Length: 157
Image (cartoon, rainbow, N blue to C red; front, side):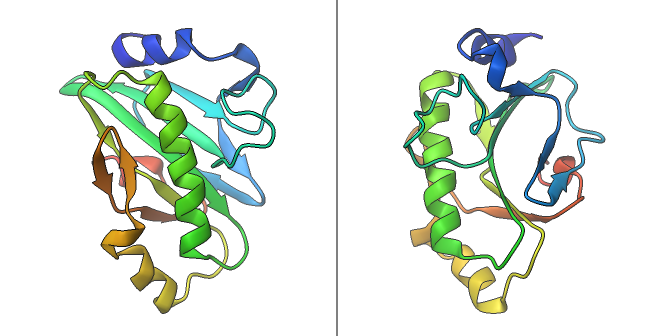
């Protein structure tokens, strides 16, 4: 571990750190993802979010040689995809990440929806609208989507 991953890892309880991203019949491949990483499962005991807080499923943080790193909240959706619900959950993950990642850290931010079910064209179009962007340290990023089983590295470019 180095840099960003070390800083985040120092502020996260061991009980919520995991090595894979899999939930609700969906999974994400970590092939080709940066090796220096920490994955926080917001549903596990010790999560930085309280039991009644809105949350996304995971927070992926990685160091990358060319820049300080990646910060990616992930929401896994098995059934029908609803943009507004997913954006609220990803925003909660981004807000939690703001407490773990210093604003001075040079990171690339990617809110990611992992879709294992159906995303209609209407919902995909909604996900591309500026009002559905996720805020992290004052900057807004549109959510990206992966299909279940796809490589996370596909979105971390």
